[in-house]
Length: 350
Ligand SMILES: NC(=O)c1ccc[n+]([C@@H]2O[C@H](COP(=O)([O-])OP(=O)(O)OC[C@H]3O[C@@H](n4cnc5c(N)ncnc54)[C@H](OP(=O)(O)O)[C@@H]3O)[C@@H](O)[C@H]2O)c1
Image (cartoon, rainbow, N blue to C red; front, side, top):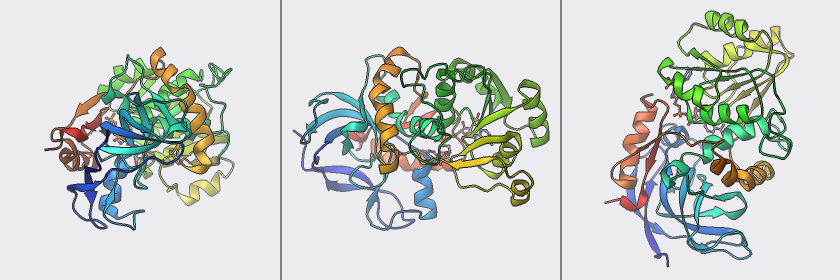
């Protein structure tokens, strides 16, 4: 039985300082689960909201988008889950579905059981990163996607065999899941950019060519063209100006560039080559317009994990439960994270 009060990491006001404090344990509505959050992962959006004051107007607020834990209570109408199930799901910063708290709500239709080959910590690395890769390339129902056929659906595996793809930022969480989805879809070659120390990891996930992220744009264009002269799909998992501009240069006329942050491509570059499509992904399987693709992904997620075709990110567990999150977010802000997902255990909060 869950308690009525719990600890959460609270953002007391816009751009305020994080504080661990009490909050109520929410009650699951129809179609929802109350989950004991045993592991939650940190994402760049969490520090960006705190530092830039984005999105949130009601305070105190709780953030956090990734969780794994145990079902404590099952809402009305939920058939597929029972108390005690180990589950993984994407929370979001519309409280009470945020994950930087000890108990939270998940929508059962976009929740998956965790197979025994994946730990709770590993599972917590999956939701936001995977959703952003999956919905950016394979959401057939919403704009803001390349609208390719999903590799997790029947007939999807290998559908794009022999087609090249370029993924900027392969070592990022989003990049790692995008590489794996691209491999499942058959793309080849799979070219990515990263610090070269991450080459082996990215090759193990499916990258065929890892190019140094520090190459100047001109040199990068030359290297990519040697591997694949025409690339119709480019996914920019970093989406800062230094990656968006070469990404736009590289995508072929008639091709699609997927961005994870707002479009900052040089206006002159775009008007010189207007026949390239740029889409901006919203990686949230809970969002109404993303839900249908999210449901289709989550229906297959446990099987993909069990088969090992989607592998979680590497994990670093932070000390002090929820109290360790602010320091972790600072490291993310300072660009001190490489090919690892920071994970916190809310029930280890002092
Ligand atoms: N639109 C959405 O819905 C959505 C959803 C999720 C995330 N995002 C955004 O997507 C971005 C990535 O998020 P994430 O969680 O995947 O980040 P992350 O895991 O924290 O990214 C860290 C990695 O970024 C790589 N990196 C940084 N600059 C790079 C560059 N110029 N070229 C190549 N690699 C570079 C580093 O690679 P090396 O270690 O190899 O140097 C590092 O491993 C963030 O800006 C985030 O806010 C958007």
